[in-house]
Image 1 (tube, rainbow, N blue to C red):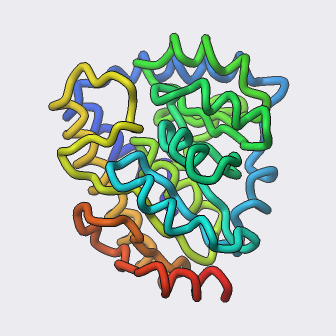
Image 2: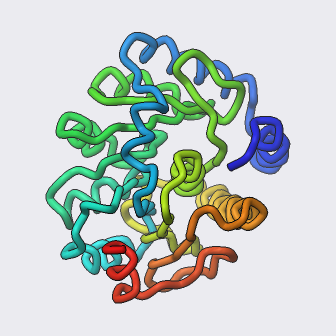
Length: 260
């Protein structure tokens, strides 16, 4: 949806706001590249899972279980579920089956993500300066994997745009041109859902990241409009903040969409 040059301008601003180290992000990307170089999935492997499908991006917000329960009886034939990090655990609890894709930086219930990877999910793992230990620990255990970074791409490690797992999942989905993208569990409020991560050491920083996620989702929607609304964008989250460019949809209308 956006060029690398455009993304790097956004990233530079985010790095300043959160005092991130681009050098450490580069090191993490190189580490991930080394770990997956000989077994990583390519974008061409992901494309048929998303293109012309209705993509459902599952965030780890407080409403995620309720939102997923409403989708249990919807035929998955035309859908692709993309869970964001800890939301994978919620998905397993509701569906008792793995999602097609997991977008993750491995800080929210990674053992469940490993389980899903062994049962069909492709984990799109993001490396950044703060998760090198998680990358080293869990990446070797993941059977199906593709790498992403927020800095310069490395061998087998791509940059589709996006910063938090939630907004990055939308940018990744958008790259592969689905018919629609629908958000669930994407509350983006100060209340942090229990599936977000087991322990949050810096609540202020977490809230900052949720604000950035909203900004990036709205930026994505803006770019989508500029491109002639190639992708329909919806929000099926129960409650939460309004995300400009993502139209609120109820389950009845979503079912119609899924069968269209």
